[in-house]
Image (cartoon, rainbow, N blue to C red; front, top):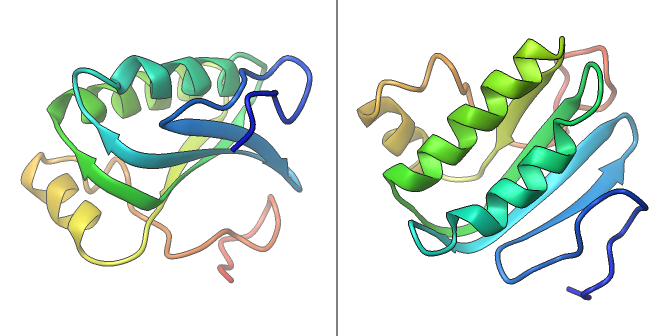
Length: 127
């Protein structure tokens, strides 16, 4: 990761997150551990990604090592903000860890995880 922002108006990459555009989506790539000490580093990226009208945000958790309840709170706030602006926020993850955590927290219905990026902005197809 470089300290420069990938696109004007987006925050610079930090130790836990970076934001970039992938087709119709803004992708917030989350890396490492997200807990009470690092949640605001991720929140900065999610806040910027959900700032516009009708945001379509993918949160890429495939490189996530750890997520606690403060990280879940950050995701819930960002998802609510995206929805308020007429958009959506979806999670991309691999493996059973994140879905298991979402199920235990009662959030699996709110965040049905995608195994990969949708092929385009309109369909539910996955690659």
